[in-house]
Length: 331
Ligand code: BT5
Image (spheres, rainbow, N blue to C red):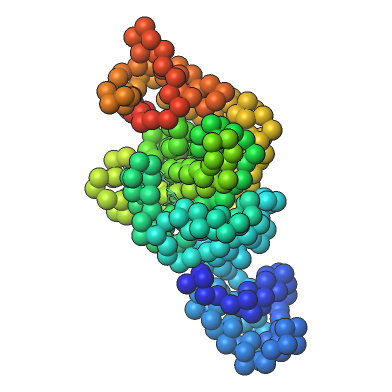
């Protein structure tokens, strides 16, 4: 239960990690934190139960070996390079939706950059009432609270900013050429590996806050997807052939998102449009578009500086600010 690890356990853990290769005795841990040796040993047993591994010397000293692949806030916070995103991290073993939890924190004035992360979601959601499959231990389910000082009309651009950031974080792993499917999907080898859900609380001319929800399929095997998703979804492990450390990936996503978000605040999408277009999986392709209750077939020709998809349909040119598109041929 990530929400149940105690501060004493975290303090002991961090000290042991700081010691690198050096051995530490339970007695010195006790002295450092004003604890009895019994409490230190209990804490070490609890950490073992969480999946941490330590080496023990013949003299009963310990040294840190490995951490479990659990999205503990203290693991994400340690060594994070983002400055603002992740300033507060709240972790949960299971929630309905991290976006809903983030929304509740935002209303209570949580600062910009607050992150909500969960081991699983029981009501993970996509756009337009769709659901996001969020099984335990395999994926990343996180939401970030932002308070951008831009007009509400600019907010849809943040979905592209987030999709680009996730694609860039994934591209750090060898062989994973992540692409963006406008407006909010990230694909690897033509299959969906991540999705972004941007939710807004705003008045007519002012944004109160934005919640960026990010779901990434990380260590799923093919059997972990429902029959309905089997042909369309994939995970990083499936595409890379080996598991991916979720804590490191969260740190990378937050770092990329912070960089791109700061650019967005300064110049809108201008400085990232080239990367968004370079990674777009649909530009120049024939797509079908659901628009005004009709399905149209056209060619995606551009993404403009507002984040709109420009599509040529017969002799007409449409500018879509949101919507559903699908390729008419495979990627
Ligand atoms: C999205 O919606 O792709 C946005 C997904 C955002 C999920 C995150 S997880 C953390 C945060 N908390 C939440 O409650 N949500 C966010 P959309 O474009 O509407 O796509 C939804 C569709 O993707 C579904 O109808 C399925 O077809 C498909 N889908 C569902 N789960 C999937 C998965 N795990 N992997 C790939 N595709 C999936």
